[in-house]
Length: 339
Image (cartoon, rainbow, N blue to C red; front, side):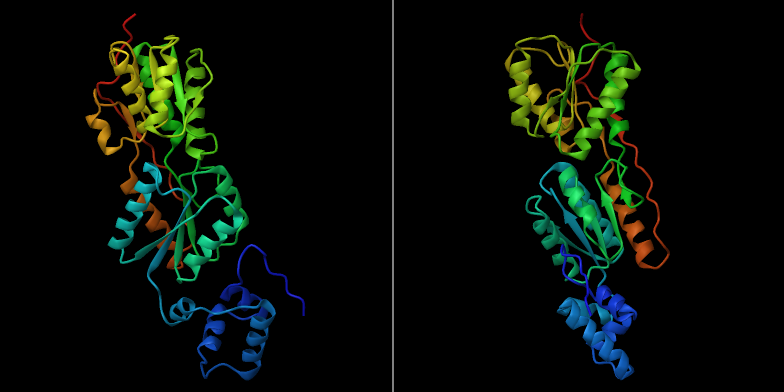
């Protein structure tokens, strides 16, 4: 008998059940030598295991005896503020629901690295998985893999199917840009995030959409790397031309670097240049001057994420997650242009 198994992942207990034409509970009973299993059924399951080269693991056997009450988080970038805040919110919400949250960080964007991190979680018998894949190339690989437990994806742009829960990055960018336009700015630059980041692309599209809708001329966005150091270097370069009155930065860290460069040049914020960031990191309220920025409710994101997963785990079916709308936090880094 010739069995085809996806090469990207190791066979699971559900693969064995499919080939043997039994339920995965039956496979679990065979693994645990349950006396109620008929010999013919046992033989079919054992043969399917051999054909698939299936190797049972301890976590899977534990799961067959009862629920693990564990949620897995598959993260492609846990160091940045957004993903890190999402993980913290998921851990809090999971703990409140009586679940342990295990995290597997993806080392790089190679398919084998992503598959290895996914297998690590599945081998622990997780009941559901949260996928935080803010980079396009990582998400593309994940879409080709088979995740045979309930899962939901975070930090994408909302165009990833009905398992996506996200903060509307485009709406947030439009809020920030609209604020500057309504203050009277017409020469607005955008410091974007890395090109392969889904959120960076969405925020850039939001900026361009709002500028276009209000018939304000635009210049090409500058692609950054999320760091304050990059914002500082860009700020120094932009000061050579000084043909802008406001900058919308795709995150608060780059905004901090921009503010540093402007202060070094003896310019006033917001007297000479207005600055808007994105994320509302805890330090944003203590920048000098305090930073106008876009706030994302990561705590609510975590709660909704766990609620969606638990609904499916409980057999109530997949729930299409709602979109969260960000909030503009106006502080003293923005004002009407002085011209």
